Image (cartoon, rainbow, N blue to C red; front, side, top):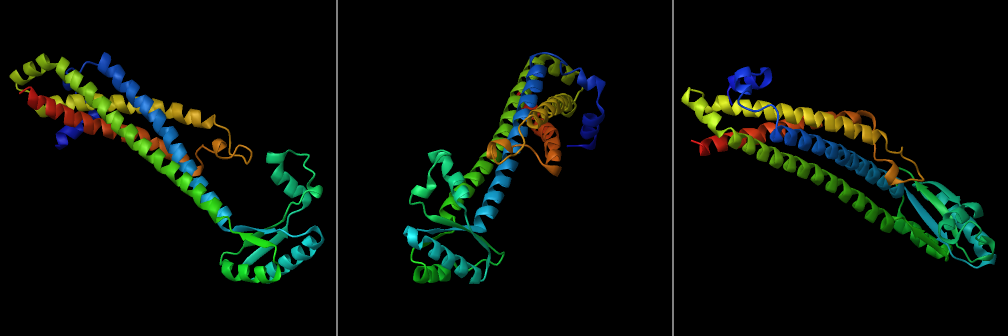
Length: 299
């Protein structure tokens, strides 16, 4: 592409702009498609970032915690609990070990059994929350010592819970990124169709321009400029609406979980601003290819 074509694209050319009709079906189609795809891209981007945050949070929180479950007769529960706590305090790499109270265990079981669960009359195991340091602890060695000194203790490092959750969040992030790519591809396809329709509708005008000495580069630059600006305007409107929709989403909360944490955070709010630029770049490439291909066919 020559410097003259780029200058014509950026600064405009009134004579070249007359080649492409400013209104009509192709103009409305380009504006609508660009705006709709940019709107969807903002939400796909928000979903991708939220999924990444969720995967990191689950990986960090569950990787540094474990649960020690003690199943013992009622008359031995207190002694085994104290013994287990003492072993955990002596274990290098364990930052904190705390036995959950009856109220806390009731709160854990209430989603399944209701808030009025008579936990004192049920054979519910004692749970001990274990927090590890950055260095971690020797799980195999701890399990061996617990099996020898606290027969009713079972250590759960949350691996069976953590790995599927992290994998699901990571897959959701990949799906969001794939959606962004599909949105870009669909935008390119629709703008290509619109450009082809505009070129076909102006076939007679193009023939006249060629007769008076206009080069294909001049004609193509007119189409490229008009469709690129349409895509930029439509994408900008779509991004503004999309960011407004994201602002209306509920803030992240423990009660709502993942569904309330889909917004952008910090510098993440700057990322949607790149969508109009990418939309214009897609429109530029798609229209340039379509224009040159169609002009060759009209030769």
